[in-house]
Length: 129
Image (cartoon, rainbow, N blue to C red; front, side, top):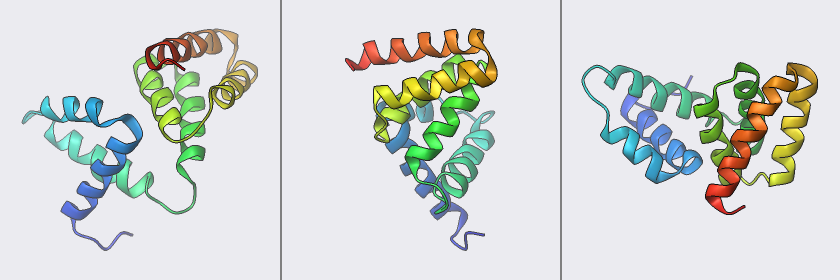
């Protein structure tokens, strides 16, 4: 377990979240934090983005690959688009993302891959990739 203070873990997680998803997106999400959502945002930044994303066992590219596959399988389009952006920020190429989505087609079904390819194309277009 991480021995750093909650604030240190939160700050480290927020830093990782900004690096992966992009500062503009995260800053907008953080600005929308209110009393109701604050505990969830603390959970995200501390546990998700620090305690898991910053673990030494997998690099960020690998974590992005896993997220693309899981979010595609679950049909979570909004989060999938965020993580296609994150995958690009973490150094995955368009071709590597395509390979992940082809794997999704085989193991999760063509309908899941249709949605995932559409989401990826939207992100690629937005980013000029």
